[in-house]
Image (cartoon, rainbow, N blue to C red; front, side, top):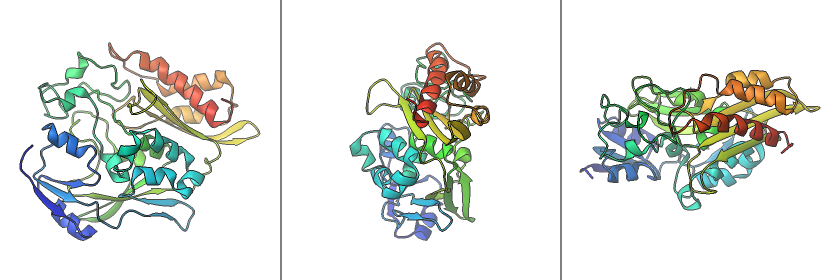
Length: 328
């Protein structure tokens, strides 16, 4: 581990001042960043501890939405009465992630910023990783790629984003509130993370020194009919092979509106917009759901180790939508 300075931020303004320094990184729960530092993947020159900032509240918004502070622990968000009653999809996704011990430490802001679990990225013994060292290549293209992307990847990187929470936030049209040197702005959860393109080293659309302060959830009519399905190798403490966040507005058995986001298939949570359009006006019948599921993975590019994900994603979509509708 390299040498670094350590600053405890007492308020947001002091955190922003300390975070502007080149090589500075914000530290919340540290459940991902510290592991990466120990492995020599991340080498910050300064850690700005933001864990003591007053950003750990969950409050109802006047227009009917909900604001979750960036420092709220994942476990607290998952069990909060307002989250459970208004946004059960988010509560399910949070509880599907990691382990109870990690959820007690990890924060909402940190969850959004966690990095890929690609083993070529994590292990510096492998020289070819464009995310870790731009221009070095992508070892996963010809290597072990069972966990890797089938949608939105590029020749530069086929890693996937590991967050469960972020998939639910994308489906719920959440907004990420950030502050930086130029003031405050909001970023749609759907646009917060980036596809790799030719700059896979950039995971998000944050600028250097910007700090996540909260996540805003808009008023939602999806509370009664939603489901988060996570397909993984073991029942707990494993990353998704494929996950699906499904939310429906139903009337007399007909889908009036739908939200569908996938995890484990792309460099960012993957919103299946075409499939959502196909579901609107459809009944909860397998033929219609299978057609929408096929549209959701249209254009998928599989590799030697992960071709199974295409069919797995289609089946998971059908299963998640049926569960959201109370059929399965």
